[in-house]
Structure formats: structure tokens, C-alpha cells
Image (cartoon, rainbow, N blue to C red):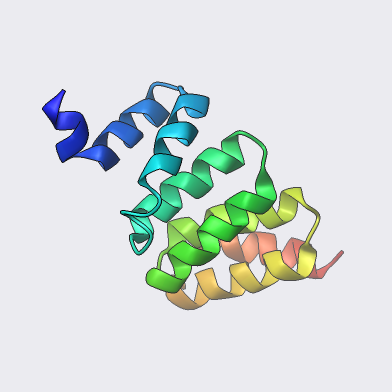
Length: 119
């Protein structure tokens, strides 16, 4: 049991990997104070909220993760998907543009941007 307390993020990742999202969310909430400035933690919590279809909370966590690590294409990609699920086209376009700026070879972002701008 000592590992749970020594490596709480590892336990959180395992819960997510095993599909225990509700348990992961509750455990993750208990870690919030300790990891409030950890972009990886914020990404994981945003992902859990997104999976559980609480998209607005997911976006808040993705935004905090990006404040801490603004060049994280993976977080930007999930944030784009979250905005799309809420039909927030302009925000999704902004995310695509940031992804392309950070990763010019990201053809998926180019394709999505082209599609969104043509709507």
C-alpha cells in the first residue's frame, strides 16, 4: 500500500488504464491540492472528465495544463475535441492553429482546420 502514497499519479494512471473512471475521478480530486501545478495531473483529470462527458470541466483542466505546459500538442488535441463536442467552432479553430504552430507536420490539425473554416 505504500506505493499508493509514494506514487499517487501512477495509481491514478492505472485506474484510468483499467477503465475505473469514476474511481479515478474521486482519487484524482483528492490529489488536487498536491498537484495543482502539475501539467500531467491536469491533463489526466481533464481526460477523465472528458471520458465521463463533463466536457466543460475537462476544458478547464486542459486550460490549466496548457498554462503550465503551453507546448503540449496532446493536450491541445484533446481540448480541440472537447470544444468540438460543445460545438465551439472558434475555440476549436484556435486550438488547431496552435497545434500547427507547434507541430507543422500535424496533417490531422490541418485537415480539421480546413474543414472547420469551410463551415
